Length: 181
Image 1 (tube, rainbow, N blue to C red):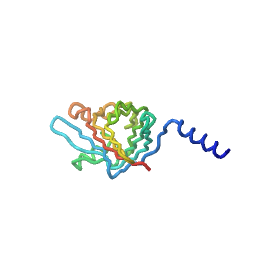
Image 2 (cartoon, one colour):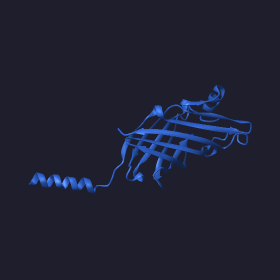
Image 3 (cartoon, helix red, strand yellow):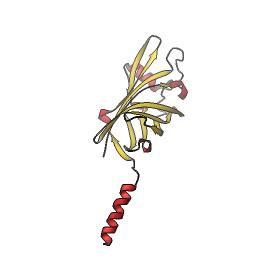
């Protein structure tokens, strides 16, 4: 009888507990972070090859989740090798002094099943700025993808080189794939 009552209490406790966020693993080979920088006479594509995440997802209550993204700035690439080297120097990303860019959510707004807005703090070049990242979420059994397309004002982080010749806003496209452990 005592075993039965203990098992029943455990079952009730589990059933009444709120859902919780569980850690999901980044599938790096299926993920990418790219950008397009524009200037008066053209545009250049680029991105980052190395980044890591810490993600906790709660499918029942997405606002309980969190995402932390660390980008290795030295993994920067562009469509022009000379430009890549220039982007890595102090005029832009200053990769020796600032080896990473971080983004960490402070809130998640899941207005619908597939539209999510990540609210968080991005730190780049030693400056932290609150940003909002609109995402499309795709969730299947044991896997999820977040896709974001947004503009980021580089000057808010002190990246002012070429102001007036290079657009302040950089177009960012990110696709992050995750799987349940």
